[in-house]
Image (cartoon, rainbow, N blue to C red):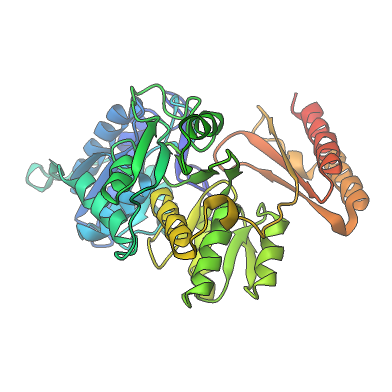
Length: 447
């Protein structure tokens, strides 16, 4: 088996009640994963989730399937994705499972797996799980069934971990910070981390009701936090997504900083303090301005495919530690084994305090190339839109017009039925013009 049927770039994801996000499939998935992991010596798995109402249903389904395969389960409750990676290691569990659709609306959900080391599962294990899904489901003998226990101190453990990544000689006392948790999994974590480090915290998106995750708040909806930062005169703002692995920031003037700018600040600070390991990994979507700014610092830069798992793979191949995506996934393998929005934000705060600069000034020196990103939704999964001659012709036309002053990237989303059209140029008008031209070509084929 060489091609995935169920797993995408970030686990298995879809609309609740349809496709593969339903109780019947998820019970089988829990069993299949349990059988594969048991064959590799696994005895215990942790399960965490974000705040979607469907999390209860999917948690119970996974629990039943894993138990049938003879795997013990530790239930973490609502916890950020990076917390589950961390807790999988600290509890000496052989795997961790996250129930989340990250930045998607509440009616979507997904399931992804972490290894005992806190990294996403290798492709060969995911493929083995897919193969097992095709087999008839069985159940171990009654005396071999897995047991489930609830872990009540998970949030406190993770809060202490986050605080431990912040330099002990520094304090956030005197800083006013707006924290937007997207009504997601960080709602009971991020505000407490910052308060316990001394900050005055103003909360947004910390009242989840199962239906409001990512709804007009969080890292994918920045207007709310921009307005709040300006309204209360905050020093800066943190915006996390529904599962807490993405971070966007806002300076005191209301300017938004994306993942590329956050990576730049962290890398420059690491270089200044003699902690830079090799270079920085971005993706095909990373802004040309980031590459140019790092080049001026003498820091090597490499691009991976889009997706934090691919950033991670390239970091490991090169032996580097810092990488990320402009969407807000930021990795520093010296701090965490996966993208962690809270930890990344603390690193930026440490850089601010060490340099005696505010966030606005800290981000200076990085000139962003204007990027236009247009998402085109499609219905027919069987059509290869990107390979179509009309799309390729439109792409070549744009590239010829832009020359060396810009670039074009077309890709299919790994988590949603979208074709992503990105055009980057030193001329914003040209960027928008050619992105719209290509997007319209795709729309004609998709409709």
